[in-house]
Structures are given as C-alpha cells and as structure tokens.
Image 1 (tube, helix red, strand yellow):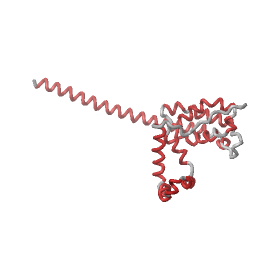
Image 2 (image 1 turned 90 degrees about the vertical axis):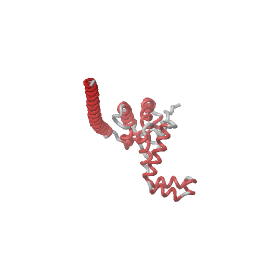
Image 3 (image 1 turned 135 degrees about the vertical axis):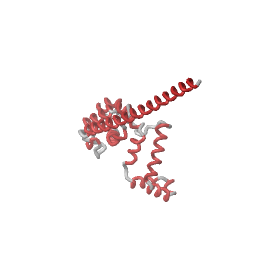
Image 4 (image 1 turned 120 degrees about the horizontal axis):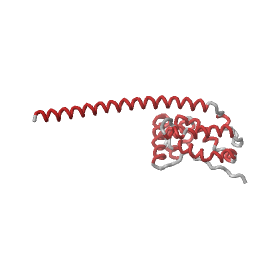
Length: 209
C-alpha cells in the first residue's frame, strides 16, 4: 500500500515538473517571438520610411484647389500604402505609424481634378483597401484629430451653441488636452467597433462627359 502511494506521488511530482518545464518553455518562446517581432517591425518601419522618403509629398496638396496634384507621386504613394496591407493584417506594422502618409493621400483624394483622371480611376480599388486599413485603426484616426492646433478647436467651440453657453467648460477642456484626447479616443473606438463608421470617406472617381 505504501509502495503504491509512493508510485502515485512520484508520478504526480513528475507531471508537475513537466508542467513547470512546459510553462518555462512557452514563456521563453513567447519572449523570443516578441523579440523577433519587435526586431522585424523596426526593420520594416525603417524600410518603408526609406521608400516614403522618395515621394514628393508637397506636390500632393497644392494650395490652389484647382491645381492637379502630381499623378506620378499619387500613384507611388497609393502603391506603397497598398503593399503594406499584408503587414497590417499580420500585425507586423500599425497603420498609425504611417498616419502622416495616409493624411497626405486622403488630402489628395479631395481634389476634384485628380478624381477626374485615369490614374485615380485605376487606383480606386487599391484606395478602398487603404482607406479600410486606416479607418479601422483607432490611433490612425486619432492622429488626424491631433494635427490641428488647440487654437483651431477654440474657434470650433466658439461656433457651437452648447459650448458658447458653457464657455468655462470649453476652456477647461482646452486646458486639459489629455482629457480631450481620451474623450476623442473613446468616441473613435465606439464609431469604429460599434457603429462601424468610416471616418475617412473615399470620394468616387468623377466621370468625364
């Protein structure tokens, strides 16, 4: 009877040791995976930033709304952001890391003259994929709202009746910018995951008669 109990205790102890070893192995592999993932992310980010440095962003948002953004640069930027989709899907890169590039692309799509071009029509399907990537990323959308200065938000608040009525509350919000950004993040998260709202609207091509 004593021998049987010893055998059972030994087997239990052996199982416990194997479980502990397995836990350590899993943790080690997780750390290694995270290390290689971070290393891969850093290398990919650097590679893509080098590619984006070859694009003339200034030519994509002319001050005159009637001037045509550079079609070649627009095509290069569209192709680059489109090729990043697989990296976003595999979580190797985050759209928010490239929000600046997307904002330039988004701005270019608002020019009517560009939307009349053959280039825009040919890239329209790719643009839809790109817009979907950035519309689903809370940080990428939030970046769009942090570009303007607080002065611009003060001007906006001055035109909203509710904030005009409660000016002290509006000024308090401007004074606590972190709180404002937290509120924006909650609203954006709700719009994306619950309401399925598209913050960045992709305008369709314009047909020439």
